[in-house]
Image 1 (cartoon, rainbow, N blue to C red):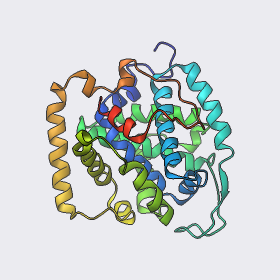
Image 2: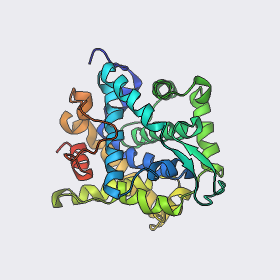
Image 3: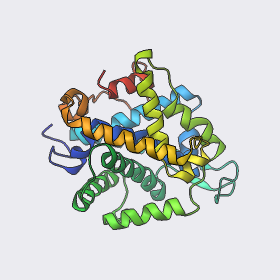
Image 4: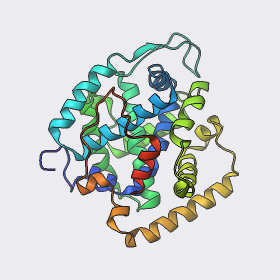
Length: 294
C-alpha cells in the first residue's frame, strides 16, 4: 500500500510478513499480563472472557493496519485508541508483587506502554530467530527502530524508549531479572484461557496443540512457572522446541506463499476493525485458523 507508515523493504514488514512469526503473539500477551499494572488495565475494563478475547483480536488487527494498511486508517485508529486508553486508569485493589494496594495505573503511562511495545517486538524477534532465521545485529536495530516509530505514534517520547538494540537487550534483562514482573491470580485466570484455550475444528486440534506448546515454551522459565504452565521437564521441553524449530526452518522454504506469508503482506489487510466494538464475526478460533491460512 503506497501511503503507509512502512514499506515492503522496512524491517517491520520483512519480519512480520513471515507467518511463523505469529507464534510469538501469545507469548507477548502472556508477558504483558505478567506486569501487574498492565494486567490491571487489561482486565479492569473487561467483564467476561469472550469480550477480553475480542479486545485481543482487535489489538492484533489494529497493529496489522498500522504495519501494512493505509496511513489514513492507521491515524484514525490511533486517535480513537488514544482516547480509549486515556480512560483506562485506576488503583490496584490488592498487593501485587512489589506494587502495594492502591498503586495507580494508567494505559498511557510511558513505562507500561513501553512494556507492551517491548513484548511485541521481542516476541517477534524470538519467533523469527527460531522459525525463520536469526536476525543480524543491524537487522535487529532496524526492526527496533521501526517499533520505536510505532511507540512514537502511540504517544511515547524518544527518551521513553531504549535507543539502540543493546539498550533494548539491557531493558529485557532488567525487566526479566528484576521485581517488576509478577503473575497475579487475575493473570492466571484470564490470560492462558484467552490465548491458549479456545474451541477449534477437529482438523486443527494438532496445530492448536503446537500453538499452545510454542507459546508456553517461548516464555522465560520464571514467568512460565508463575503462570503454572511449567508442567513439562525443561530438558524435554527444550529438546522438543529445538526439533520443532529445525523442522519448520527446513520445510519453510518449500511451502507455498499462501502458507508461508501472512495475508497482510499479500495485500489482504482488513481495515474495518473498530476499537471498542466487539467483532461478532470473528472468534479466537476464526483468528487461529485464519493465521494458518485456512
